[in-house]
Length: 153
Image (cartoon, rainbow, N blue to C red):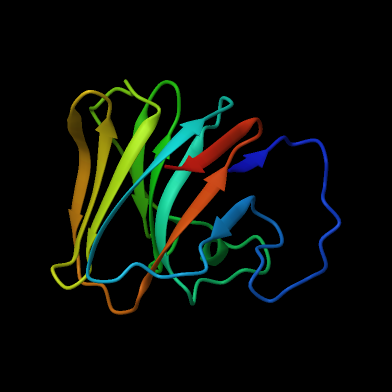
């Protein structure tokens, strides 16, 4: 589980693969081929951003090159209590689907260039799909707003 309380700063040493400004984490292992995973999120008013990213995303500083969805190296679904939105290369699209579940499924087909997000409850409902060309391995990533958490299922 990943949690951001917005209160306590943990005394971790600097590391080149650690984001130093944004409350984001990138998984150590890539997803390859066709892959599906689920997570549960709980959140404060800013929610969470569920992302896939190239490992080459910048980690140091506060530029858009370091922020999931604001560059050409990452794609992200923002989940909040009131809405979903999708972002890539700083283009944010509000999605017409209303949040009904705190469980999200993510499907990646690397060679086909497909990234899909689903709302998962008793049924699976498509939130958003994007077709693109992935040029590098993809890594799951999570950005958390104050008071939010993410747990892989």
